[in-house]
Structures are given as structure tokens and as C-alpha cells.
Length: 268
Image (tube, rainbow, N blue to C red; front, side, top):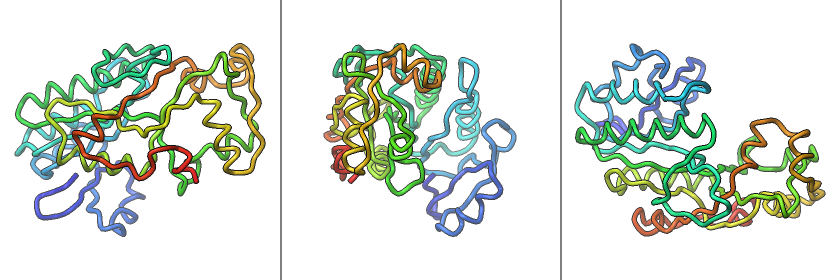
């Protein structure tokens, strides 16, 4: 959260993170989105607010985002608010290229919770704060542990054979951070943006590309039934949805120039 005369504030529920945040020049605020009373001090603090917290892991709504919005509404409203959602709200699109006008049709409870959060943010924004929604695909970060496909490739985790495979989209963590900043200052009210790069690859081809970059064996290709026996239900849920993202609005309206327009450039 960008603040009046302070710089940057960050809400955290973990006391052990306070020191690390201060070391980065960030003012930490201790609070828990699952405890509405702990959020009261947030009212009127921020001029611009970025919300990246996920909904709870169960249920159909998102009480966390609702609690945060209610707290923010108690004081001077921020000048803008950006909510980080997910492209999972679309459900399966059969591999089609879609833009932000596509109607959400989530197939999972996880996706439905995100749709509920988006709806809450939009309704709240009608009270006087311009809100923007970033729909975010898979995030990768080569400078973070677990931020790339390397560990999965080293384990030999399979991917789907080409005839069963799905299109997947990605964004480099640095480009996502820049998209968040651009939306905070240039996002249009009640506007949705695809925060994705230009890559249009099927998932198996993405892992093949990463394997070649890292000098590792290509992952085994299996049919869908074999994959279901080897992968977790969460992993399989990502293999049941296929879509390609049109990101022109990100680049024209937010005027974002991607530093890593393809996963080949970002992983390398």
C-alpha cells in the first residue's frame, strides 16, 4: 500500500516477517484478514492499495477481501485499488484465445471464490474508489526457490501427450510487479486486465522448453488417465482447463512494456 507521506506499507499476519519488511524499507502492519478486528487500523492509511491475498481454501465466498474492504471504507478512501485475481475464473475455454470481455465460468470452487472476490471489489469501488482487477496466470521467478519448472523436471514429473495437452499462460514475477504498479496509477475504473506475457504454448511444450534451457531430460509424456493416477487432484485441475490470453489491454491501456515477453527469455 502506498501511503500518505510514508512510502510503502505491507500488511502481514506473521510477526516473524516484521524485521525483514523493515529491512527493505517497508512499514509493516500486523493484521490478519481472517480477524476483521485486527484490520481496523488500516482505515485512511493508504492512498493506493494492492490486494494480492488469496481467498480462504474452503467455502464459496471470500470473507477476507470483504473484511479488508470494509476496513478501508471506514476512513478516507484510497485513490485506487488493484485486486490480483486469477485467470482460473474463466474455466476451460477449449484452447481459445480470449480477451477480458470473456464471461467468467469457473469450474472449481477455487475459481468461484475468486469471482466472488472480484464482485466484492467492484461493488466496493462504486463507493468512490477506482478499482482495477488483474487476472494473473502462472507466475514464475528464476531468482526464487521453486519459482521455475526445474525441480519438477528433476523429479521426472510427467506432462500430457500432445493430443491431450492444454494451453497455459505465464508471467515473470518482475513483470507482474510492474503491472501492479501500472494498474495502481493508470488503471481505468472497473477495468479488468490480463497480466500475462506474450507466450502461447501448451503446457508440455513449456516444460520441454525449460528442460532444454536447463540441460535436463525432457519430461515423460503420458495420456490423461495415466496422469490422473500419478498427479494430485490440484495438479490435474490445472490440466483440465485450456486457454490463451490476449494481453493487448495490458500493453495499450496500462502502457506496460514487458521485460520478459516470452518464457524463453524469462527462464534464460
